[in-house]
Every structure is written in structure tokens, then in C-alpha cells.
Length: 218
Image (cartoon, rainbow, N blue to C red; front, side, top):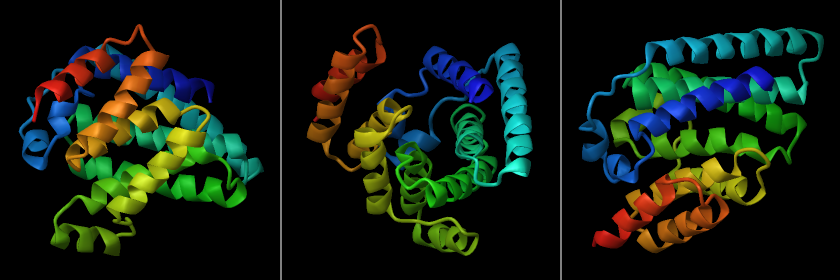
């Protein structure tokens, strides 16, 4: 958990620098596809990948001794999820991101099988279901054959559970939910979540910017 948490710190610092989590990039498919090409920091990317490598090495060793180790399964879920985020949101490598998303969802399902109240794992399953469910029907069909579930409402339900009961990932689940609500034209729900996040994290400059952006749009 130590190295994967370090990797998350590197990733989110890069997200913040590049403005990746600003909601206007996700308001609809055209905005997302047309988002500008980013210029990632190569040194930070190396630090990120090194931390991911340490996390995966340690988790694989732990799972070799105990295939049901909760911490190792959670670390693998996070590792794959972070790599999916980096591939999609920074490098714009969608196929690679789907590969990592499938891995994250599989690890999350293994964790939930031995720990049904490990609600943080539902962020991985929820993200996967929502993203795949948002794609066109032919693409959803192909990805379902490949083992990726597609159900937007079930994905939102998983994210809501993490947002309400998660230990580590509840704030991130609320960010993802606010983006989903923007996409679903539910501005009131998105504003409610962002206002709560602003109150909880007053030093974070993302939330007031996103609140102002939503309040200025119709």
C-alpha cells in the first residue's frame, strides 16, 4: 500500500498541474475526444512507474503466500486503476487504458469476494461499468465479449457506495460522481457533491473553479 499510495500522489499531482480533472473535458464525448494533447513530465512519469513496479512486486509476492490477502488485492486494484487513468487521461491511449481497467475490475472483484465491505474496491468496478456503458452499442457489445461489464446506472451505484462508505477513495468517488452527473445533465447533484468537497477540502482550488463553471452554464 505504501508504494501504490506514492504512485497515486505522483499521478494526482500531475493531474493537478495539467488540469486533467476539470469537468468541462468530460461534459460530453466530443469534449473528451477533442481535449488538448498534454505534455506530461517525463521525470514524474518515471517516478510513477517506479512506484507502480514496487507495489506490484510486493503485492505479487504477498499473493503467492496468501491468494486472499486483502491488502495485496487492494494494492493490485489501485495499481491497475492508476495505470488506466494515466494511459487514458494523460497519454490518450484508450486501448491500453481499457486493458488496465479490466485488470482493476478483476482485482476488485477478487477483493470483494473475500471482503464484501471493502467498499473502496467498488470504485474500480463502478468506473468500468460507467465508462463502458457510455460507449456506443457496437463498442459495448465487443467489450462485453471481452469481459468488460457495461451498465451506467450500476456503475453510478457502485461509485455512490464508495462515496458514502469508502475509507481511502470516498473523495475521489465523489469527484467521479460529479463528472458523471455533469454528463447526465444533473447539475444540481454535481453542485451538491462539489460543494461538500469544497467544505471538506477548503485548500483545494479545483472545487471552487468547478462550482463557478457549473453555475455559469445553463
